[in-house]
Image (tube, rainbow, N blue to C red):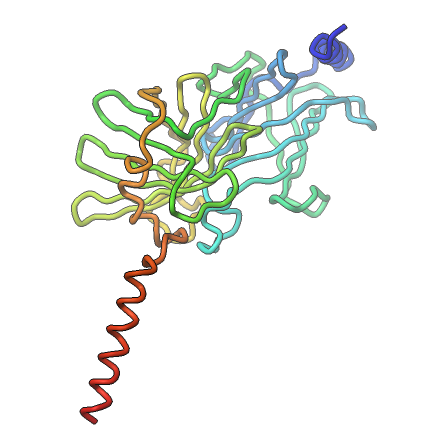
Length: 309
């Protein structure tokens, strides 16, 4: 029996052991204090992964197993959101993510658990998470962003036909964290902008910040990107704030869908508007030759000023 067959057999055995209890479906999601937002879960029998979206803001990815104490389904995985894991713009390109563990109730109609930020284990003192089931019907792909395979977001051009185009690359002369991406975009109303951030290749999500302008009006914020096949999902975005955290955002429960337009955009295209995110990223310094010329000019001016004193 091959490894793949053994894996699928183990998934099937786990499903039987868990009985009819399942995270799959829709739960409440009080993130941001909304009573209408949802936390959607979809189980993928081909990969054994449980994936989901909460409040159109965050994405979760992980596995379900039997809890060793209660025997009920326990989800253990990672949550992802747009923007940095801290409120410091010095870490603006690092993803906001961390471990999460949720335990389903005995009747399967609610769950409770804890979460933490990356680099910290989940402990009883961390944030708590508890929601109530709304439906057991399997959500749509639009609702839980689930996929059988992980598809790269970078090195592609995405579009909303007739309205906007985004080109995203994995290379740049901006200093990026591991898995970093940079991109430029334009909209039909003449808005132009740039993004920079980093991706988690296992979950297939990218946490980015954006900065754009329309005439003399500028805007910046954070968002989360995830690809399913030839569709890129863009989370609700938080904008108009400097510390890049979700706060009183009117767009908090919306998201948009983009279709694949082309592959392998040029680095020049992806970097076209990079200056807009340079205030959040380490952009290239002045070239050596130019830097030397500037230094010489400064020295000459200093000598001339000294001679006149």
